[in-house]
Image (cartoon, rainbow over all chains, first blue to last red):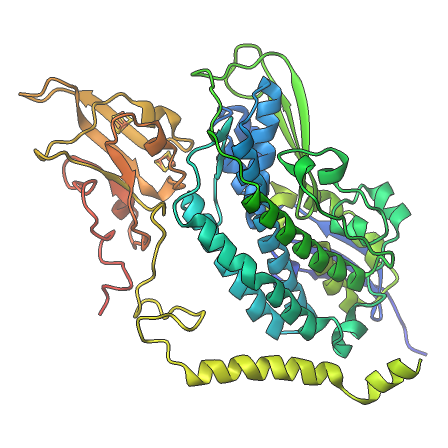
Length: 366
Length: 169
Ligand code: SF4
Ligand code: SF4
């Protein structure tokens, strides 16, 4: 009776729910998505190429600008990768401070995700509470290194300066409040009937597909696999920390929400352990005046808030900069799962799927 | 089954959420934010000034010593380390001064990323990143800072032109 045909529409690149300049090409049959193609590259700046003619010391500033929500994790990946390339041993105190800041950074990243994802799906209130705490952690970063987002927090071989006076008190004040704050988010969302209707069974991804697509981080752990680089290949001070890797088995949006909330609790635990067991000593290793690389290649992976973040360096003999640098960006690889999660499902679920993948377009396009 | 039916019938979740929202709504309603003690999360900038941490990284500024002399001795370390190459120094001499003197020290703020590498590399403490953060301007020239000619603005805290929100009364 009616003539039906597939319609092709663009979601983005200026759509408020795509968290940046992501364009998704959708083929729709009525309200059902038949094909979904993420189109990326709108934010490409050529970070990997730029870093080839910057020194190892300078290159760190570009890592702030890949995943700008989790800049400290990116800084950590860069400096530890370079340290591995040159065989530099970092003092233990520096490792502890780095671990603490990276975990606080995981909290900010998850809080931003929680706020914006809930806002996309229709829960306005939790956004305000999540940003309240995020603000406080950003002040902690500001106290430590002077910037809130583009931190450039660490240096090759350690830290630029030790923690400032009053820093421990500031972190402890935040730590004392934070568990109650997570309770508040849970009050607003976990049992909320609209939230549950909107997330349970939405955008599922099972462990087999997730592993086949290379998906890592909370999205993989929500599908049942307990792969976490902090446990599998400990770096910084994680080997000395006592924490659990939260997992869920459902693999849907609700499970990912539960995993991320549980991860924030674990991060809170790790920060407490870092504060309690902070060793004395220097924060900077003895370094040669200029770092000259050998022909050598190194891959260093860390568990960024979004998944496995890897830095791959190839050195050039006698050069101060990497011959080639590559970033294995978790957002970029996790975004591949979007067609798998949305095809054959409703258009409205695409928004939930983009939100739950927690992509940052600065990192996808680099 | 029975408990889930009960939960559907009696809206505990709505009650919990409304209680939380009501608690914070009441708190905000009954407290004022204009006093000296901060009670709200929101800062009423620019009416209330924001507090910055001591290590805050703002605009690059040159420091003069007690005699009013520029401390910089043109070692060019900052020029070399700057990742975005926004510092240009011309080495020169000044009468009655033993150490080299920068006849030109240009800083193009529009490309500076406030990383503090220059300050870190300077062994003579002659530059700092000050606490100035209202760095908006209408013209591109206003971002050029230097020590010579019209751009003698490397030394003080003056806002970049008149573009500070706080000063627009
Ligand atoms: S703060 Fe960084 S970008 Fe700005 S002038 Fe100094 S080194 Fe260059
Ligand atoms: S590093 Fe310091 S002394 Fe050397 S040129 Fe720069 S400002 Fe001058």
